[in-house]
Image 1 (tube, one colour):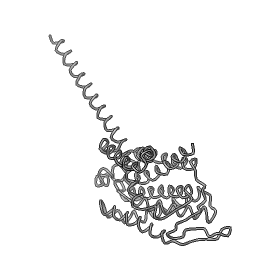
Image 2 (image 1 turned 30 degrees about the horizontal axis):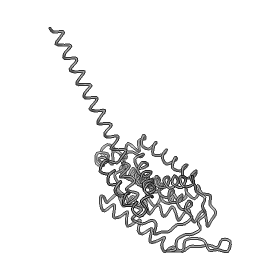
Image 3 (image 1 turned 180 degrees about the vertical axis):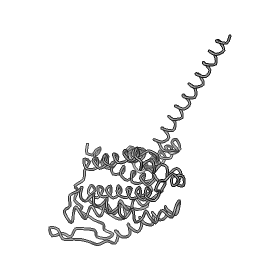
Image 4 (image 1 turned 135 degrees about the vertical axis):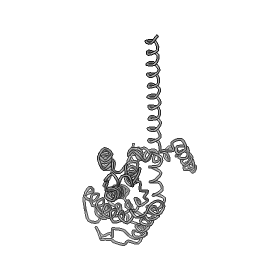
Length: 308
């Protein structure tokens, strides 16, 4: 039971990471900066809760706000660049953050022991105050926000910008405001997720927030689907469970993991959720056309019989 609970908790954290990436993809921005915001949230929440006695949700809120502000500061200059250059800029930001925390020394004495970030040694002894109820509650809140956004003017504007930014601007949509807002929203989600990760794992190391984690976060979205918010959720759950499913293969489990991911990507090129919805839509359209043809054929027959 404890094993399943831990798997559930890790899945929840990965869902938050995936949704933070999806928030920027909603406006057509491919960003790898989320891992940087994740590390900021982790270190800030760890320091606030362990060193200064902040309650968990207050620390998470502060972490989210700090990451959102940094997201706005990063989002505005990133509006001027697109494609591979945007990706490189966000990777550079994540690396700057990683190097900063790798060299951060800030400790205070608590009960005769020095507590806090110790450079390359990381932040050990973080108070473990987050478990599945807190993670589940935050995931539900974030999912609720995406559910509302998809059905609001913000979501419609974001979809229009993703499809055609020029046409969206011609329709009167404030492209700059929407893009920066979604970038900041994704940063805030990553900051909160990082805070939960730190207060769940008890140990924060800057080297854990590397380019590898950024790629994994993209995999969650690519495998699950990037046009519906529940696509990244499916991708995060699947890719979290796969390594555990193949644990019987010991050293070869990651090989099996890679093979399955390749098969899934080949079978569902739009992502699992988007591909299924696309195929269902095609089937409904074929059925509609077939019914229309049958109706037209029946009407023609009736007309011929009436004339005879």
